[in-house]
Figure: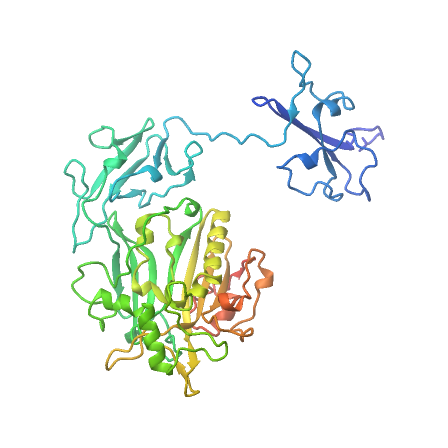
Length: 531
């Protein structure tokens, strides 16, 4: 660089250097970067012996010439060449050791912070925690304990709330209160907002079982066709919401659309909280699947079956085996030579209760338990459920976690499984057919899932084939764009784990009409592909 008179000014350096010194452990390292992106080859001579291969945490491309070739030095050695490098030697003349692994930065906790350790709460039935009109989620892992915790600032107010139902009342067992208690974080301690006395979170428990509210919406056209492709009107559809009543409002967790002729759930919708999902509750026993909330006076779902146990029996291996033999006259998938249903304890060829909105997509135990309703599942081969479908669910959680924000997820079913029987005729599979009723619990041919990132207005659809007997790649229901999505890194082409493809949402909607119309909420413009 030069001034107008031609005198040199602000000369561009050939090298940049940086020294990192951990004074606590007395370790240090120096970096030297070449400030010339036009070099065709690395420098022939270095100022020091390159130590980069000893540093576990140096994981970027140091040798890229276009990005600024870089190498690592012992600080003492580099100072023998560049004299203005700081003298880090102590009074005895000893220099710091090489910084092989940097000391992690200590967690900063502002004074007065309250920490609720979710993993040490021993209350038998802990209440929901509500703050600012939403469920209060654990938001980080405590460095000192390694436990998933909720951090509250000094002065934050929140509520402990027991979500009972009108059919099974319960109370908050604390000083005779009904169902809720106002709490405040005061100088690092949780206190009763009214009495201003310390509160032990383990002392807060609900007297009875907490359950969500399930709302049935009247005369809503949530789809235009059934799982079997027939045209369908609002009178044969049931749209419902699983959620929670607090602060005078209903807060939806899952929305569902069900074909009441075949009682197939066509789709569900839920929000995945990316900032919190990695700190979700884990380790609790799974609850039993249910038809509806307990003690509801009417049979709103699956009314053709009298008891909960009859619903559970539909998914028993022995029942599935008997049904397969009844329909096909044999328990055999002819092309593969494998049984359609394995009734052994170790067998994976059977129909599991395949979650549509999965339990692991939710943070709190109460929300996870709220996914265990028969309206939120469909018959899915266990090999597929525990194969590519499980990998997909994990990948979507990882995506939301990386973005640290909410994403919307739709999950649905489409088509029906058909197999050839002993008479060489192709027949539709179903797990139950009550007298005088349609074929119920028809295993879908496809499971599909749509991930919508509303902040970036990007989306992608996935289609999983619910058929572990495939001998070759099947016809695709949309153009496969998996090679455009970097984070699809599992074996989607595995035939016996549930072959899977990726689609643009608008492309899949041309086949499955009840896939969500994401353009309608965005000025008739479809979101870009998430890649």
